[in-house]
Length: 280
Image (tube, rainbow, N blue to C red):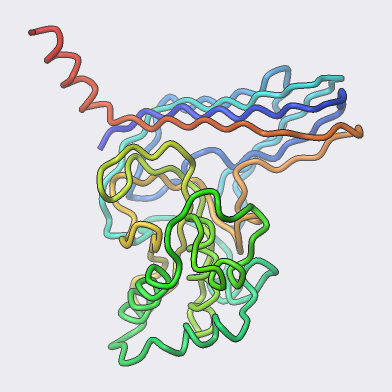
């Protein structure tokens, strides 16, 4: 699948800030399932700093905005070719050992309910089957409901209320997978469409679980599937905060508000529609 992505993030401050420093994880991962073209990252009024590939295989680049400013825009545009690898992360180079992802965080810390959910999955044939069953259990336990949780909502809190978004599904799956001895991590990226085919107008997130013989395999409990050609992988971490596409700090006392707009388009479908309209 050929996708065109436009992602704009606007930070606004009620008082001017200065010396804003950002660390951006906004470049698609390099592996067999995707290849990016014409990928451009721009920060309004910013100065691009050095970039590097970290131990998880993610490309990180730094930007600085000297200011003073009351608004900063981070814009990403590019094209990418994707193909379905059944969720398996083939050809991705990284240095961190999978066992490093057995460590819990505040967002994924297990309570009694998460432990009960993890223990409820039985009779798995192998680690891959166990991962699939755990993902299905999380899908059943947490209904997809936008606007019911916040960025700082934990896996335990989302499970307690039985509702959440992709971030909550990923955190819960990471938690129960680690409880069952499977290394698991959070993945940030984009999704061209949800499982039913409707447009997905936001950045997306899912989990990867390390299983025997295959390595890292993606699972998306929010859509009850493994990542396919509709998914674009940006980067990973222990949880949403660790894997955040944009992290930053600024000098100043201004309160911050955030607006995000993401558009992921199927290039071939757009071309077909354009040809059809031209012929008609």
